[in-house]
Length: 272
Image 1 (cartoon, rainbow, N blue to C red):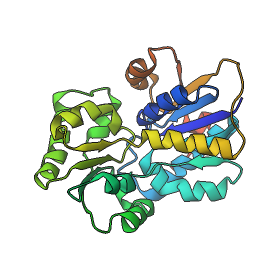
Image 2 (cartoon, helix red, strand yellow):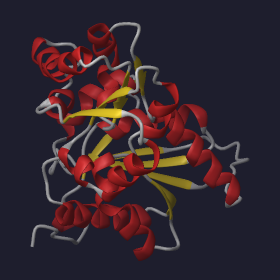
Image 3 (cartoon, one colour):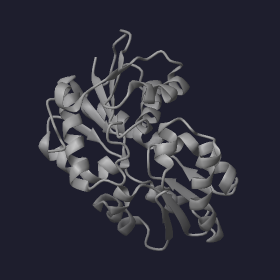
Image 4 (cartoon, rainbow, N blue to C red):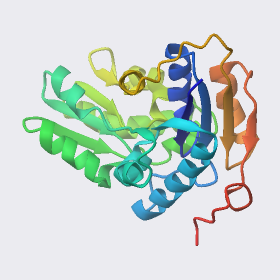
């Protein structure tokens, strides 16, 4: 049975994992949440690349043939590098769904919510250059939102204040589409929809990622025909209790999370 690795700076990638497990149940999954270093969004690109390489080596040691970089910041910083460094592995990265937004917008005004690292990456800029010629894009980094989601506050006052600060100026600019450019943000889609209203499209990239993983599995003849029960392993570099609130919401508490230490368990001190 093929092992699929998934990693993120924190709990955001668990949203991707949940949908992968639902749509592609015949695979083993290994998830790594780098909660010791969350959020990635404010970090330098070289530092994020170092974290991503260390995690990739760990997932390869767990026999992962396909690795989903379920983090926009990590994809922006390291996707091209990891593909060159580990050609034997199939990588699927995240990118803001600007192309989809351009296809559905009527007002030609689109909001994008993402972290600073994503906006600074070549990947984001190349997508905008290719697809958004006649569209006005309004950006916001949603300062503090990843931290709120990491602690499981998906509908509290603080979370709403962050989202309203980001979205209300965009609404005043007559946007009709919002792109979620961070894997943490789909957790607060209900609140986003409350703020922007039913006339604004909210684009969650999760479905596109699942379809892309399905494609690469087919192209590389890694389709699963196994009738064995699949296995899911969850690892965090932070405190296991910090991941448990979101795990309970997504998987009904049926998956154990294990602690991984960067230097002792991975044999890597990326901070040097």
